[in-house]
Length: 319
Image 1: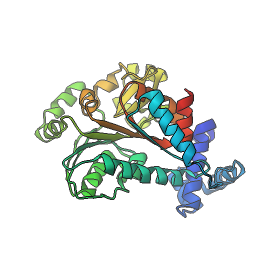
Image 2: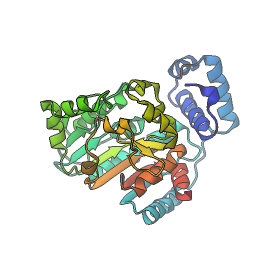
Image 3: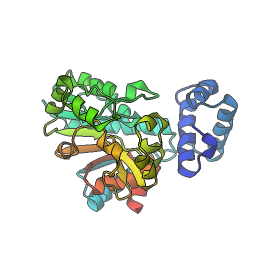
Image 4: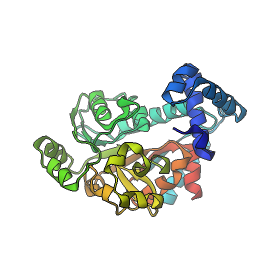
């Protein structure tokens, strides 16, 4: 990560995350430096910058009324089935994510019924929710990995691990999609979809009751991630500037539609029409830089439920 090139919102989010790891998780500057591929002297300067910008300042405010008003406005304005907003203003990133996770876990437990089928993707926002599930009653569910795997800095936040974790919380069953997220060749994708164990996972994903996902912004586009460069074509790279983010592994164009690029024809993921049949299509989003793509995802119907923070909610409502 080239920290010095980050500006604006992305830099503030990075400062919040580093400050959270230092003040809340008790990690020293050397450990943080290793995680962010920099040195401890740079981390010390970033912590100082976070203090100067009051990013680490914590204030207790009567913000629940504000959050409730935002929830109602999100539902009314965007037609969401449900919206949950956490007042995380002035909280460090890690603590904000923790509070979002706690609220999300309670909501997820509320909508899951006995024998529900839950589709799961990946990401640290999802981990913050699924790792905090405390079932209110015995209700065995089936968790299904909706998309393939790829290497992550936090292995516990990958789609396979989160699927197993969700099933374990309810002593339920789980089915893995044992394939990479993207294929090199569309024909290989078709062949793998016919492989018996993978075909079984696809067959289990019929009219799911709920799906839970994160949303990727422009800073995490697969089209600009070196990890996925072996799967990209020149056409993919040319179209990267016209894309606004990603969801369920699909790259979205500037209008929020699934982009007409080769990479989207090589993604190992449950068919979008099946995803859209889920009664609850829940996204967990933390970060105002994701507001634009989140608003488009809502407009397109990719999600109908949102769990987020006040800052991100405010940005969505301003669009």
